[in-house]
Image (cartoon, rainbow, N blue to C red):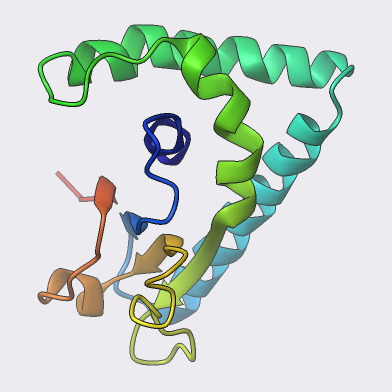
Length: 148
């Protein structure tokens, strides 16, 4: 969604994703570390323009775009974006994303005010603090793990 917003000219805006998988802060930190490691891996793969890994990743992302994102957002305002509009923005969007643990034990803080000129792109991993009314500006994705 960050790359799509960049393609629409929304570069200096806040983008947030919520990840809530447990109430235990130590596990939240592990999840934060895993997500950040994966973000760095994706960044590195996208940086190598001629690798087969990049081609495979771009094919997978295009398929997700066409089969999941576009059908879910067709009726939203802002007009339809084709993959060719979004793909050039992937690397820059990924470079801007930070992954933070947001809970009572974490030292990380969501610095929306401090980043108002450039926008904050964040994946916020947390539990109780996130489910108790904390506002995530520019929230576009929420991921919850719940026992059924």
